[in-house]
Amino acid sequence: EGGGGEGGGGVGEDEDDWSHKLWRQGQLEYNATCSEWNSVGRKLAFAGRSQLEITSMALDVTGTGTGRSAREWYVLKSSNFGANWSWVRLPQFLQGVGGLVANPTSDTIYVISGGSCISHSADHAESWSPCWKAPGLTGRFRQLVVRDSRTMVVLRDGDVPLRTNDGGASWRRMESLASVARRQLTAEYSWSGKTLALSGVAGQLFVWVSRDDGDTWTDESGDYSAMSGGVAQWYESTLYISSLGQGIASKTFEEE
Image (cartoon, rainbow, N blue to C red; front, top):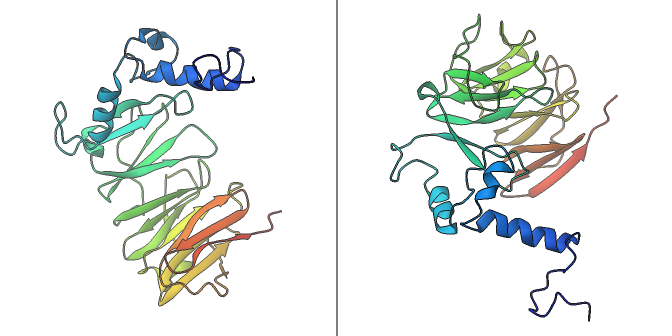
């Protein structure tokens, strides 16, 4: 009674049942004969492949195996909420990329490559801009923090961070951070972009918050006395920080 059919598999017989949909999704994803997947969504790279092939591709993500040159870098993207993924090879001048940064107000994504090149893509990693060249944009870049298409912050190794308010056309030093510039800083904007959080370690972890894009800062470290870690991420206006010593903590900030 109430079971999943004679086979005892626990899957509802009604095709509208959510468990049946999940089961069918799994079959479509892993069935090697499932060629119709190629016509279902855009760039479903795993369609028609066996589980062994999929696993081999996943293990070969760094490009060290057959069919790819050593240390090649790819962007993985999905158009169906992670059910399937496709591979897009980064151009040669972006090989060695440090990670992707999304613009929360547009479809643009950014990368830092080799510590000296910032590039962006507006077509889901199909093509990339040349490395940015702009007055003031110098040094070795470690992190790009994006508020919107005009306001961004670049954290640099051993030097004062930079900020642009004109979409990257020009950059200026953030002298408000001169006293901690040589620390290994991490920063993130809140979801609204109204609050910028920054962390580093100077004997112990410090957490600063700015509501004017880094012109002025408020020390919000409180009694969080870890000697490592830092800003992890935002959820709306709640900031999460983490460390090996004190674990995960959060604080919600008022945003007008």
